Amino acid sequence: MNKYMKKLANACTAFRREEDGNMTVDFAIALPTAFLFAAATFETGMIGLRDMMLERGVDVTVREVRIGLLPDPDHDTLRTAICDNAMIIPDCENQLKLEMVRNDIRNYTPMDSQPDCVDRAETGTPLINWANGGNNELMILRACSLFDPILPTAKIGASVPKQSEGAYALVATSSFVLEPYK
Image 1: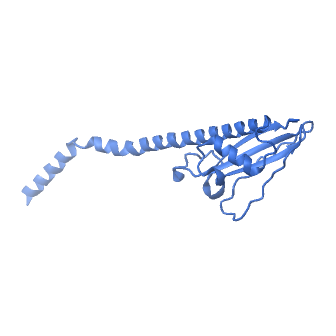
Image 2: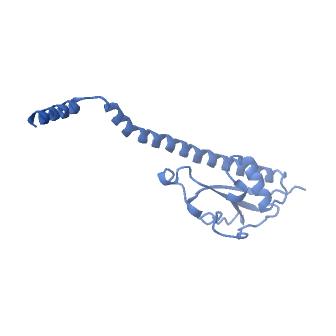
Image 3: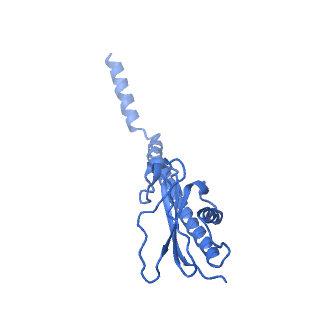
């Protein structure tokens, strides 16, 4: 029996001194970290790209309104134009909500700091803060677009405002003066 115990002790000592497989342990520790950094980079890049494209869509659409290509626009016309110009916002027609308010040029009052975004739980037509302006009136347009995070449990976009059902909210604001066209 003592002979078997000695062989077992020698085998355990030899196993402890072996260095085979030590890279596997390092790899198993480093792989999730590398994956997290890659996913964070991708998620952050998509947030930035979608934000830039929403800003672009709003700016191009407001320019079209200012120069008269979209005369007397309503909510649906502007939403469609912004979605066409923004291009990469997923399900844009259903996830984009606009607010347009008339403001006095000489007595400016800022909009509410909380944007009005789509409520995914709400059924029916949502209430929209919308006012069409007339000639020489200052109009402020704010667009709020929702999209779902790619990795919702990773909390990568923790600084991005959350809205309905944990979706990220991207907001773009622009102002313009309606010029007389005639």
